Length: 85
Image 1 (cartoon, helix red, strand yellow):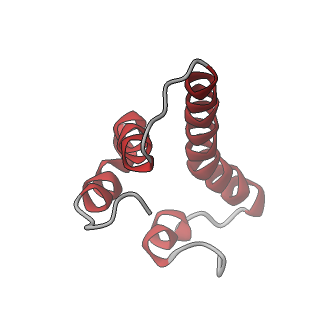
Image 2 (cartoon, one colour; image 1 turned 60 degrees about the vertical axis):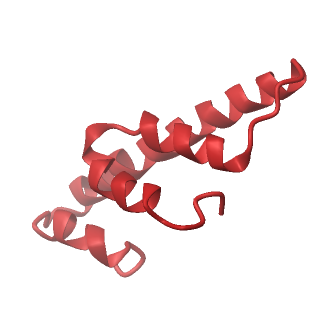
């Protein structure tokens, strides 16, 4: 649990079984990884076709593609001054 960011720990705190805890963590974070990987693949394909996207555009597209459970985080990230980083 120490490796999980503080804002996510409460969501997993009630799970007492180690196996169920690991499954819940993987489900929560692998979905984000899969979304990011799909986006990176699309960006690479666009670059091969000569279409270059700015990092800010890529980040905006990633935030828009997240599932509803990430809405709170997405709103905060979208309002950051330097979204391109």
